[in-house]
Amino acid sequence: MLVVMQPNASAADIEKVCDEIVRQGFKPLPMPGAVRTAIGLLGDDAQVDWSYIEGLPNVANVLIVQKPYRQASREWKNENTIVEIAPGVRVGGSDVVVFAGPCSVESEAQILASAHAVRNAGAHALRGGAFKPRSSPYAFQGLGLEGLKLLALARNETGLAIVTEAMDERGADMVAEYADCIQIGARNMQNYSLLRHVGKLGKPVLLKRGMAATINDLLLSAEYVLSEGNPNVILCERGVRTFDSATRNLFDLTAIPVVQKLSHLPIVADPSHGTGLRDKVTPMARAAVAAGADGILVEVHPTPDKALSDGAQSLYPEQFTELVRQLRLIAGAIDRELAPTPPMPAA
Ligand code: PEP
Ligand code: MN
Image (tube, rainbow, N blue to C red; front, top):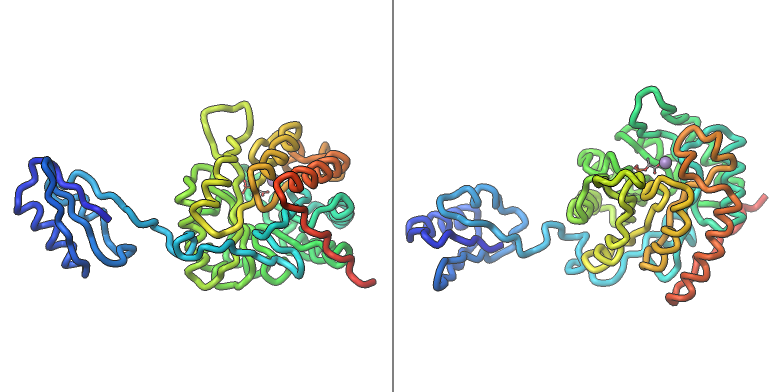
């Protein structure tokens, strides 16, 4: 941390800042310049109350030099983290992992048809919501526990890993019981008590970027989970809100290389919520793999026109099959491969 003083700061102002740094348990290092003085702070500054220092007389600004997140950073751990969500389904290594399925679990027939379709196309994980965060309280809210049971049934039939969203702490306990990986959705990325809770559950977490969250915010949210002792966090870029209504969100592909430079955590991309429109999903999924995403999360529905949520962005199974074929080629072009399909469960 570096405290930059105003050019007119007096010796007493500088001393006040130094005293405050000492009071907080650190060592100040004043660096007088031709025009102004800067004061460095020695020691591990994660705990410093910098906002108080910023409010002292004639402080121009406070520069946070060290990253505010610790365990999520490359400084903390240089080698890539690989999160194994189910035996053999490893996210963050050289293999690209495909998460696919309907936005919501709607019925036994629908989820089983979805699971078989995405597995046959080459997916590794079935992703579908039992607890749905809908903008309207009158919209379909998901089947809840019944949906979790149907997902577990689909796993038994297809061998796919199961990823599904939890919206609150009680739901997270239920999801942890039935699923392989707990999704925290965009709306809950900053629900810090929920993040701490899933940090304690020990299941892998798929953490989606909030719709108005910076990459720094996303990594700080991951830090909540990591700091509770759960190292298995997968980040997910799913687009952010902007002024343009041409697509549902602005799918921020740059986030992939940015995160990979800052963090060792795997990052996957969700072009379905990122674009909101079926015909944009395939090109952006291809682009995300080309950009280095560790996986892709795509909504696929056996009959998208009848879907209870997000039908407009859901791929038809045939479109998804063709997409996976293309992703295999793109992964190969950047010296990666699609992960092997999980084995079928023994009958
Ligand atoms: C979802 O994954 O179905 C979902 C609701 O996504 P997001 O949290 O990214 O809006
Ligand atoms: Mn959805």
